[in-house]
Length: 114
Length: 114
Figure 1 (spheres, rainbow over the protein chains, first blue to last red):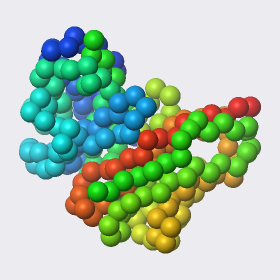
Figure 2 (figure 1 turned 30 degrees about the horizontal axis):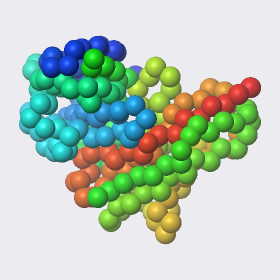
Figure 3 (figure 1 turned 60 degrees about the vertical axis):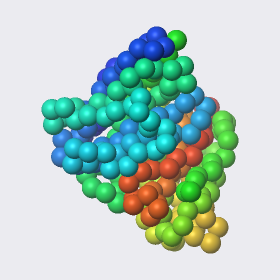
């Protein structure tokens, strides 16, 4: 069964450093998403991406964040200068189409900022 | 804005007990409703969904009915197994967001003992 793959599973970084979280969505999917879950809190939407551009973003997704689909298969989330409060589980997801359809999620990357 | 409220966990049950995890939502119009499950060390997996009022989603013995009048989508299972131990997330995808993003509840951890 096709799946969304995220790497790494766990990343530890120092405050102020840049991190790139990587995702390989399902190959025939067109819509891509990043979500995050701070420990003990809700899973929160960060950004959606379609046709090589951001289609929606939340207020969490400020100038420190960026997304890219550099090569047609990978989908990355970059945090330019990490803060302690960026520590969270980050989930990538993809879906074949917009609307009330299933989004497939990766297993998540746990980011720890120290 | 749209929101989802789930009962807090953990929910601790013995094998073969009846399970209910409550979920209520706030949204305008007619959102689509989902239950996702996260097994230890894995990503979020769609468990079931319902896209219109009075629809019943079902999968693996789990059921949830979309109740517009009570704005609820409670998850039930008649007889839980140890293998059902996981975190369960209620979510909606609403018209306000153009059906792009999912809005999640905080998740409810289920622990089933033999």
